[in-house]
Image (cartoon, rainbow, N blue to C red; front, side, top):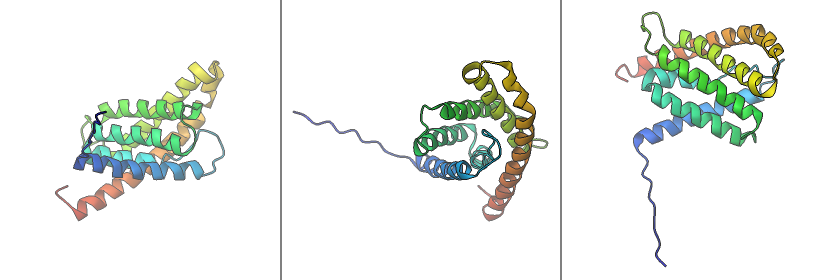
Amino acid sequence: MTRSVIRLTATPEDHRIARLAAAAIGLSLIDAAIPLPLPGIKPGLSNIVTLIVLSRHGWRVAAWVSGLRVVASALLLGQLLAPGFFMSLAGALSSLLLLAGAVRLPRRWFGPVSWSVLAAFAHIGGQLLLARLWLIPHDGVFLLAPIFAVAALTFGIINGLIAARLLAVFALRDPHA
């Protein structure tokens, strides 16, 4: 009997993605613990990490961090393949698709705050669409859109401001990063 050994070598980039994903997962778990008045409305704290990663390392790394966060958070919360997992995945994919275009907009007018607001609206839009198509096959689900839009705008602005502030702090510490 011959034994084959598979060796996986992690690159420094892999380590960076793992550290950033761990931060996003931790914030996602904090998000899950915050009691809020309506199901489905969460601050989206892990999106702060995604915005920082998007700004500093690009869309591809942000997509990895976001994808790992969705899967690992679902595993840790016992929700993998439950409806909440698919809702989170739909929101994350919608946000990432929008951010793929948003990062190409002029940085003079668009940055972490505007990206955050756009991503928050895309996130809730993707979730509402999935809910309508799969969970609640009735147009009445869209009556919740104004409530979710206010939450998306509020948390999008707050998370974007936090991300912008952290990016400014990082730039002061290491202006060449």
